[in-house]
Image 1 (cartoon, rainbow, N blue to C red):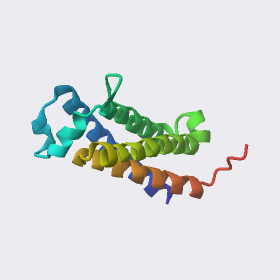
Image 2 (spheres, helix red, strand yellow):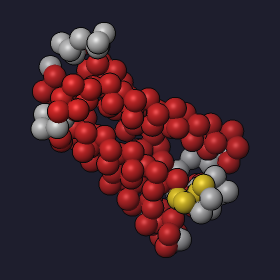
Image 3 (cartoon, rainbow, N blue to C red):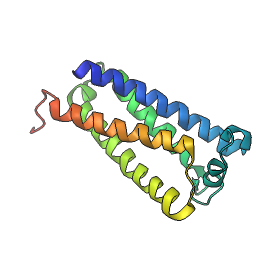
Length: 145
C-alpha cells in the first residue's frame, strides 16, 4: 500500500506543479487567452488576492508542490527524510491544505468567482493531504522518539 500511495502522491505533486507553473505564467503574462474561455479565471487572477506583496500566489504553489515532489523523490536517499519524511510530508500537506481552504474561501466568499485551474490545484492539494494522512497513519515507523 505504501508504494501505491507514494506513486499517487508523486503523480499528484506533478499535476499540482504543472497547474501552478501554468497559472504563474498566466499571472506574469496577463494573457487572458490562457484561461481557456473562463471569465472567472481572469477575475480571480486579477483580484487583489492573486499575489502577496507582488509575489504570485500560484508561485507559492510551485514551491509547495516542488517541496512535496522532492521529498518523495529523495525520502529513501537522505537520512533526515528516511527518519522524518512522513512527518515532513504531513507538515507540507497540512500547510498546503490550510492555504487551500483559505483560497476556496477567497474565491467563493470574497471574489465570487471560481477559476477552473485553481479548482484543479485545490482538489489536488486536498487529495495530497488525504493520502499523506493515510500514509502517516499506516506507516510502520514509530514517531514517539
